[in-house]
Amino acid sequence: MIDYVDFIKLKNAGVDYVMLRIASRGYSTGEILADENFEDNYKRAKDAGLDVGIYFFSQAITKDEAIEEANYIINTVSANDIKYPVVFYMEEINSSDVRTKELNQMLRTNIAIAFMDTVKSAGFTPMIYGNKEYLIKRVSLGSLTSYDIWLGENGDVPDFPYEFNMWRYTNIGKIDGVAGVAHLNICFTDYTGR
Image 1 (cartoon, one colour):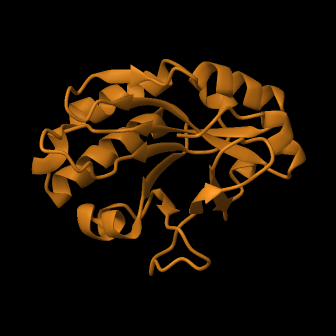
Image 2 (cartoon, one colour):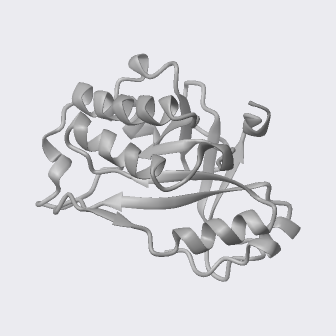
């Protein structure tokens, strides 16, 4: 859990953008849960002069649920205000009652595509997040070549054999503006110029 963020201090520390969680879907209930800090974080990040991207922590098990998640974003924020991508973020949950345990690779891929195509049609830049194992084994990268990738992999050098646009290189980083640990990223694409 990330502690309270002082976005002005982040900006002064050289940060250009932040990726904020807007909502998630319960891994057992399937209920969409708004991130209780999103609106405050979003306003304070924008006020500090930071560009913003957002992600939805998905546990969708159908394309319709993925579209519902995308529409949640579309109905919450304006594409004109979001410079960085809108991200489909699904990780494996280690629990016996997780809803996504029966998804195969192609269904998981098609769910991601449904989400990303929906946000793209609303003017956002779509992206998928995953670690190396998720991106290689859980989805079909060959079907996702027209979408940007946000790789999550701790380390000094990423061990991912395919192209990616953003890299979350640590989830235990330290930076002025975050009292506890922070997820730190490097972006290789200028989304503000798109």
